[in-house]
Image (cartoon, rainbow, N blue to C red; front, top):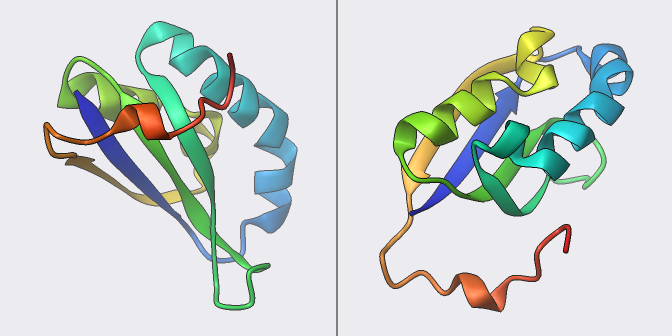
Length: 104
């Protein structure tokens, strides 16, 4: 199944985010050790397209629980940056083939 993951970050955590960015990217690249495949993801920002608010991803995972565990084990979440995690199922007709994977 495909899932939309939205992680909202706490305000004022820019320095902490920077400290954990490389580990976060590694987590994304490995799908959290195989929990999920990240088809695409990016930062969420204020309207200025610079001020971070969080991050999102479209995941392929067998269950909601696997997608949730992937999000909760992200180094950003483990470091306390995350205010909330939302996991939403995407329609069965979701056209994943139209997204270029982040890693090939």
